[in-house]
Amino acid sequence: MTTMTIQVPDELSEQLKYRRDQVPELLTIGLQKSPLPAQVYRYVLDFIASDPTPEQVAAFEPTPEMRDRLKSLLARERTNETTPFEKAELDDYERIEHIVVMLKAGNLPYVTDNQ
Image (cartoon, rainbow, N blue to C red; front, side, top):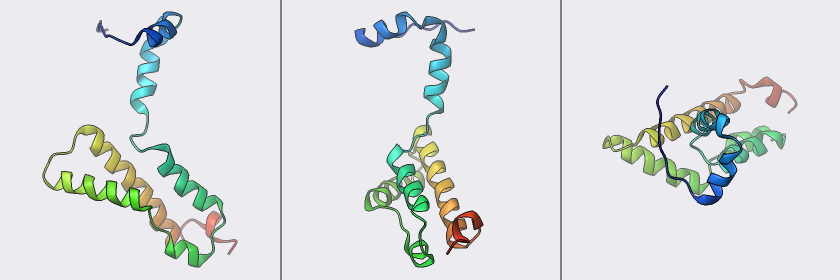
């Protein structure tokens, strides 16, 4: 195991004082966090949970903010300037796009059958 020394704010140090044995696990969980903001997932899940009509499914699109961010990430990727975090963000956008494509194609029957 590697030993590391890090500086943290005093308030975080106070919280970690009682959880020192959990620091490796906490770091692991923190590193597994999705790079996408929670509101991106919430937007898609709220839409799916709203029992959309076929017309609403066909018209479903990302928000302007999501489109702008994706456009920026894709531009950086074309010039090989993406960081590993940005690459992970692009991967998550791709997974969401795949779900939306399946939804629009009717390949998620538990969502589309009740229309």
